[in-house]
Length: 276
Image 1 (cartoon, helix red, strand yellow):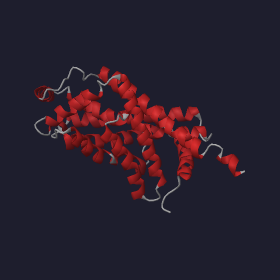
Image 2 (cartoon, rainbow, N blue to C red):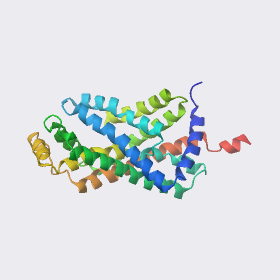
Image 3 (cartoon, one colour):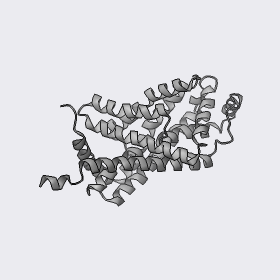
C-alpha cells in the first residue's frame, strides 16, 4: 500500500511536530520566511490569472486550481507554515512536545511568514509587477485587499476556522503519502476547496492585503483603482490588523487545534496503553 493509515499518519506527525517545536529560532524564522514566499507566490499567481475576469464563480475556481499548489511546495521543501503547525497540538497532547515549545514555534514561524509575505508584496508593488494591464492588476489587487480587510470580525473569524480545517487536513493527507505525487495531491485538493469556497487563510491574506496596501502608495495605481470604482477608504493598515489579521489568525488557530485534537483523540489517545 502506497499510503500510511490515518493512525500511522497521526503518529508520524506527533514525532514531526515534536521536532518542529525544538527547532532553533533562527531556523524557524528562515523557514518561516520561505513559507511566506511559497504561499505568497500563489497569491500573486491568482491575482494575475483572474484580474481580467468578471464572473465570481470563475474567479474562485481558477484561483482554487492555481493557489492549491502552494501548500505542496511548503510540505515538500520542509518550510515552516504557521497554519499547518497548529497541528503540533497532536505532539503536545501525545506528550512529545511541550506547550511552551509549541507556542515558541507558532510565534517565530508566524513572524517569519509575515516577513516573507511583506518582502514579496513590497517587491511586487514597488518594481512594476502590479502595472500589468495598464495598472488593472494593481486596481484588482487593491479591490481584493479592501474586501478582505473590511469583513465583519465574526465572518473573518469563522471563515478562518473553516479554512484551517481544510489546510490541516491537507497537511495530514500529504503526510499520508509515501511518494512525491501522492503527497502533492494530498496537499492540493483540500486547499483547492478552501480557496474556491472563499475561506480565509491568514498567511495567504498577508500577501493579498499587503499587495493592496503597498499599491496604495503609488499614485498611478490609485488612479486606476478609482477609475475602476474600487472603494479605497477601507484599505488601511488599521483595517488590515483589526479586520483581517487578528480575526483570521484566531480562526485559523481554532480550526487547526480542533483538527489536531480530533486526530489525537481518534488515533493516539490510549494507544500506548493499548499496546501493553
